[in-house]
Every structure is written in C-alpha cells, then in structure tokens.
Amino acid sequence: MDRFSPVDILLIEDNATDAELTMRAFRKHNLANRIFAVETGEDAIDYIFSKGAFAERAELKLPKVVLLDLRLPRMSGIEMLEMLKSDPRTKSIPVIIITQSKEDPDIRSAYELGASGYVTKPVDFNSFINSMCNSGLFLMVVDQNSE
Image (tube, rainbow, N blue to C red; front, side):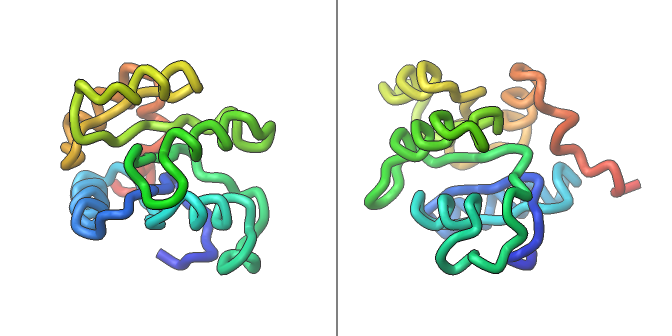
C-alpha cells in the first residue's frame, strides 16, 4: 500500500508480527482493499493529519476505521483515542481497540472515550468481524471490488 494513498483501515500496532498477521488475515478474506499500518501514535497522527513523513499525503482522506493497539510506545492507545475523539475532523471515525486480554482495565476507559469495539491479540478474523458487526461497521470495510 502506497503511504500516500487513502485507506479504508488504519492499523496502529507497534508489534510488526502482529501487524503483518492482521493485514494478512484481512487480505485473505477480502475485508478491505486498502489497509495501512503504522507503529506509533505519533505516526498515526502524522498520517491522519498529513504531517511529518506524510505531509504529501492528500489531506483529510481519512480512514474509514482505525484499529488501535492500547499498548503503544510513547503515546498510549488511550491517549491516541482521546486525541482522535476530541478533534472534530476525526471524532466520527470508528475506532476498534486491539488488546492482549478481555480483562484489560483500559477497555472500559476506551469505551468511555468513544471506542466502537475491541478485539484481542492476535487479531482473529472472526473476532474482528463480530466486533465490526456488533458496532454496525461491517459494510464500511468489506472490499466491494473483490468479486
């Protein structure tokens, strides 16, 4: 995926193996035809708002859905979520939280800040689909051009 192209799903995941497994599962199931991964909250902000390394990206071609790891270096997933939900340009973007455990205490905080759902790592395709369906977001990311 070209780093300057618009995306359907922005994956914010610092673990390269988890990111690759997630992206591979999405491609295998034709879930989204445009998915892009960044490793930090700072990179995600630069990508979304066309700053820094992504300054040449078409501004405000926002992702349809953000998959957000709660445990990120420097800026936590909760801080990233808070930033997304407090900005009028990104407030309506659905955010699905990625977490190690269903017992993660930050899940409650994430919902209070506006998260649309969560999945546990490694991201299982069926769990992701269930989370998307439960939050009414499934049709936003299905690759309509795959047939």
